[in-house]
Length: 207
Image 1: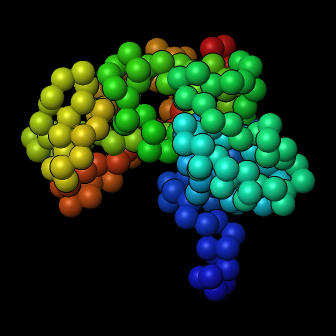
Image 2: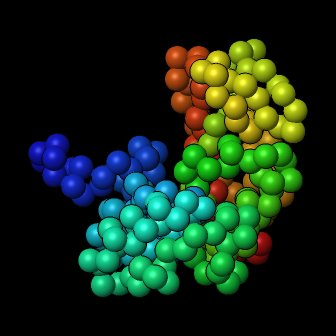
Image 3: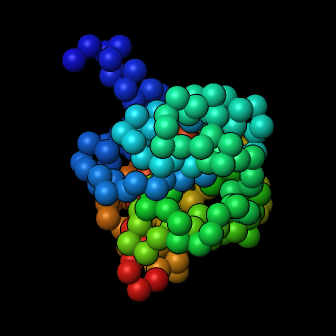
């Protein structure tokens, strides 16, 4: 397969979301939300696969670009499916989606309350038995290199400011929201400048 064809199919998709797609984890997920979708970097393949894809972002220009991208896919209504909205106030009914994607969003939380408001909003719109895919910055592996500045936020070695989680926090939150890990928590350490963690949770039937 030519590299250009791969890019045409998957775009600039998050490599760990790609990993879950390759494993077939989301094969039965037909209604999908990308919460904090930007211009839709993670949605090209899902649109091409025929999924009913939704997205929200606070950037109107990004949503406008995504509507243009999605306009050629008959299974979606760009005006209805893609909206300017905050992740903590999602404009959807509870238990709507088979899969909710949160890629590089939660680490922009202003504090723990904001973080949990975003997380709970995404969890509420997820169906029982559905999947939550999350990639976010963490302090895992760089604990001695980050500087705490209050409200759960840190200065990273690369100079950026982020709300950071650790493994203990993610395990506690998984239990608190009524989920279970379907993959071990995985973290990529980028040359001790930042760490990005993949948190893959399934909403248990009883939650």
